[in-house]
Amino acid sequence: MGLKDLFSRWTRGADTRAIARAEHESAMTASDRDVDREDFEARKDDVAARSSWAGLDASETAADDLKSD
Image 1: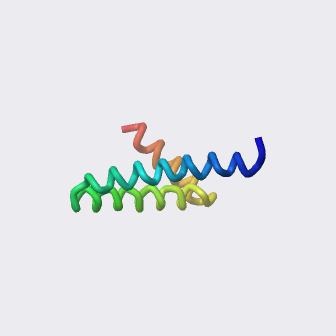
Image 2 (image 1 turned 45 degrees about the vertical axis):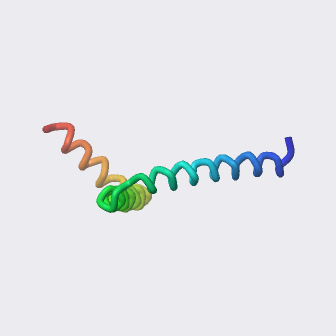
């Protein structure tokens, strides 16, 4: 297997996921799309916070607070 074949299989998988996502979004209502967009933005914020040392400590502390209740 060459590098070109590997890249070709990788892009086919990405294309398949993109098509599935587009089909899923086309079946959504406008309010479902808004909620999905908000969820995506929240996940981006979580990833950004966890990628810094201060954010990682804060997320661990917050997780401990939730577990104790």
